[in-house]
Length: 471
Image (tube, rainbow, N blue to C red; front, side, top):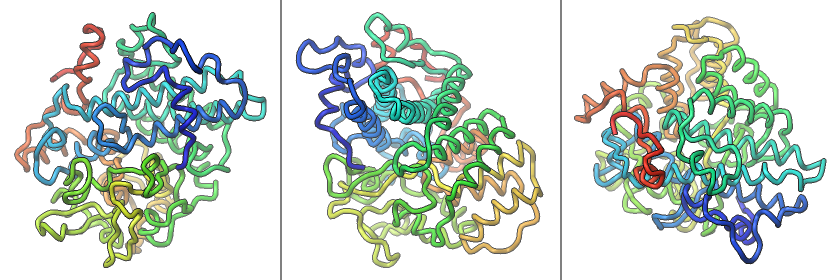
């Protein structure tokens, strides 16, 4: 996504590089946010900057906010889907359930998330500068991005600090005081309802009505509100999205009709590219050999994947005992007919898919199942069958069990950072991960279901930020 950066870095000078920095004094010279926003064009720059925050920065500096570019480590690599190649360094803490509060990736993702929230709050605080025609769209986009970010945070950390406005130094307690998860979810739901009311489906790569509906449906599934989720999902299903005929095209024919919301990247562009897919290769990227496929995920894909398997993982040609993710290959694969997305894999142009139509169809089954053990509802079977038909698994299904649905989500959405959240939402995380840990010589306990708060944040708050149990 090409974003306006020359203005926004100046306009948001109150932000530097970490959560504590958005409490820093306002600049005393040049332009600051309190005086800049006076019209739609200027406020649009803040909206663009918000999406830029979601992209994360493609560099090797430890103090940069990488956000989405490290998300796979705090999600997929904590599940039974992926691991490091060599079991070394901080990334190996995720696969072995031995994450420490000093882990740099945890701190990176945490501060990056609150940076995005700060950018969204900046838009919301300056809506009076917008015209009547643009104000609703700006508000909807900002509230979608804020809700999406808080949804990730509350699922990863549990009760968290809730910052719903641009805060000042005197508001220090807001930054370090955790609130109940229910309070966080109330803001998420309210924000997404506003987004649904204010947005349409005319834009790609930005928040839309359908993306807000799909995300709110996932929130409702997480909270056990199955009826509300079904209504939203069926609205998305009537909005013109469709499954791609070829599974490969979902990932390599970008801007296709299956994508509901994606974080866009531009190859060979130092400002708008990504490096995470290069890290999933051998000897490429900031920390090469990450997000390698576990034997358990290989077995699941071989058993349930159908036509998806070949475009989900491949054998590492340099190390035949290792398996790599295929869905986001930045350097292509001639044998699979995948073209490179850039001349330099560390400047990859692969978009990151946040929500796509296959996910909506499988959530539709989940909503109809409503926490039960199985369903034979024709509407659920139709949605389930559509996903399987695309994978070449055309045998008609007469019912769907909870286990079958979880397996289908695993192979359809493999390596898209969904597995961890699915295990928790289906209430099977503890049992599956405990067995996975035992089979691989890791240690796992119930406290590993939440991440530790960064020790640096606890120190900065003078102990006001209470650590999660077990850390």
